[in-house]
Length: 299
Image (cartoon, rainbow, N blue to C red; front, top):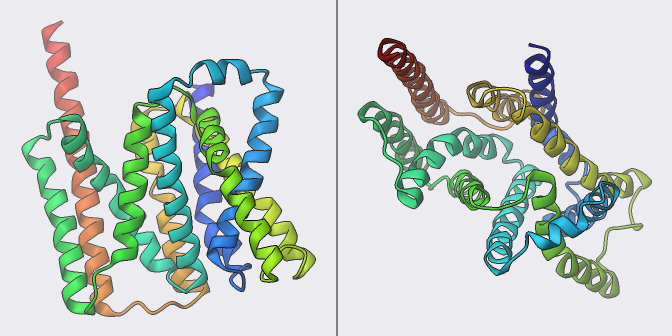
């Protein structure tokens, strides 16, 4: 019971930090998203490298990196960097609400990727929420006059990232250390280049901005470590329910704090996604109960 309570606290902590990301990155909206992501990669790798060395696991990490694993982490590194860039770009361009839609869609898209990539089979009623989510995207495209590419990009990149990590041999912290390590030299090279060109932001703005850029490594690693601690202590059902805390917070921050427009058409589209998610989780609850009763009857 204690482990479950601790795990719940760890999970809530991780999702709260991720939920507050719009406020964090909004403080840096005068700096290009590409520079911010380069700083996030560089400082994340520096912090994670220290943690890996501190646990004396560097040799174990290197031994686990055969050619297949290296390809997996290279692909994951590309996907997560695109996801980070798209999200920071969204926040700094006043598109927090649309970004939150991507993370509402993501769980349903992940289920579809499981079918496509891993041959997983869905129960008949599980297809209904996927259809509703597709209808929501189509509705938003038609009524708002443009495809919600940002939300879909965030959902697709994070969904594919999760799919690649499903086959990866390392845990969350070590995996991200490898991914940021792969990106470290290009990120630092880019930061040096913009500094030479005179367009660099580091040490050319306010001390607060410099601290926030350095802190990007901390705000990347800390929730990851909290999440890694949570998943070993609580059920995936609990994780699945709590994960909606993050996009809900981001959605509310976009509406209430930064007053992003939220017309009726967007409300209807979001509502369709929320209905699909509710049906997905209700169906899952009943399916698990039926399975439990069948197993109890069989024993």
